[in-house]
Each structure stands twice: as structure tokens, then as C-alpha cells.
Length: 251
Image 1 (cartoon, rainbow, N blue to C red):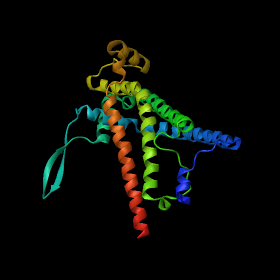
Image 2 (cartoon, rainbow, N blue to C red; image 1 turned 180 degrees about the vertical axis):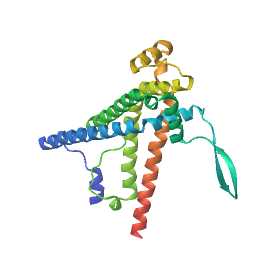
Image 3 (cartoon, rainbow, N blue to C red; image 1 turned 90 degrees about the vertical axis):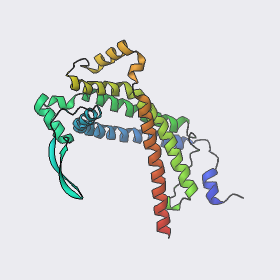
Image 4 (cartoon, one colour; image 1 turned 60 degrees about the vertical axis):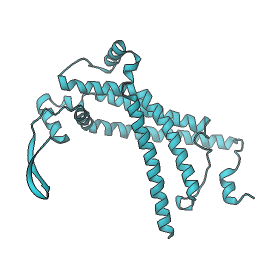
């Protein structure tokens, strides 16, 4: 015997009606409009915060050419210690040494990478929703709030979201990787004051000529692993927190 609740999650898909198709097209248009709005905001934020990205990248290379500062450490007793410059001090030193435009080294490749990766992920998400809605689990439309779902139903929803997010974000990361490589190499040139990679197109040509296709995807596997850990860690943490809050509310 199938209960009303089980029927809500296991009814067979019916052929779409003209009204359903119209609603679907309207939904896609709204999603595209919303995507472009977020893209503009994300690009503007990326431009504003690019100097911090540059500092982080140079930190990862171990490029610390500026003098240490002294300060006090409170650990059982006060003692003097030496400190490396923080990101803002580092950028100030870099500005004084090389000028304002240096703080935006690699910005062209960073913007193109963000747009390319984001557009690819979004297009793949639309494609999956339209042609492969059952990947990650059959799509079950429900109007229930989180507190009305059982643990199993909530787990199924979030597991489906995590699987599908892994697919389209991984594709976006792969497609945009060559541009990310260009950005990193443009920033890395600051260490040795090199001028090998002067433009995105020139850098892509140089990498392809000297290293072949593999050069475009340097560091791809660690990036994919890090992204996967982020997606699945977020899935697990979100599920645990939401179900914990539901249980706390009920009790």
C-alpha cells in the first residue's frame, strides 16, 4: 500500500503539456537573466579583490622579499617576535616598488577564466536539467519545507544536488583551466621580473608551443580534488546542520 507521502515522491513522470513547456521556457529565461545579473556582480567583485588573489598566489610561491616586522606574542607571557607582512602590507610594499598596475597583473586572464568557467557550468546545469533530470536521482518536486521532510527525503534531495553540482562545476573548471594557468603564470613572473607572458593569447600560444596540450591543464587534478572536497563537505555539513536544527525545533 502506497501512502500519500510516498506517492508524492514516487509518481511516474507524465508527458509534458504545452503549458508545462511554456512554463519550462519561462523558467529557463528567468534563470539566464538571473545568471547574467550574478555574473556582472561576480566580475565586479573579482576585479576589486584581484590584488588579494595576487598576494595569495605570491604567498603560495613563497615570495616574501619584504622585511619582517616586530611585535608581541601573548602566550603564557609576553615576548617579542618577528612577523611576515600581511596581505595588505604586502600589497602596499608591492605598490611602492612596482606601481599600481602591478597589483592587477593577471586580471585579464582571471576575468576570462571566471566568465568561461561560470558560463560552462551554467550551460551544463541547464543541459542536465532539460535532458538528464534523473542523474543523481530522480527529480521529485515537493513543496515541503525542510522541517516537513524526513531524514531520508532530505538526504536524497541534497545528495542529488551534490552529484549534479560535481558534474557541472567540474566541467566548468576543466574548460577554464587554461586561462587559470595563464593567470598564475602571469603573476609568477613578478618573482623574477620576467616578461614572457604579456597577454592571454600570447601566453596560450607559448604554453601550447613549448609544452603541448598538457601544459594548459597543469594542476588540474589537485584543483578537481579540492573542488570535490568543497562540494561534498558542504553537502554533508549542510545536511547535518539542517537536520540537527529540525530535531532541535521538534524537541
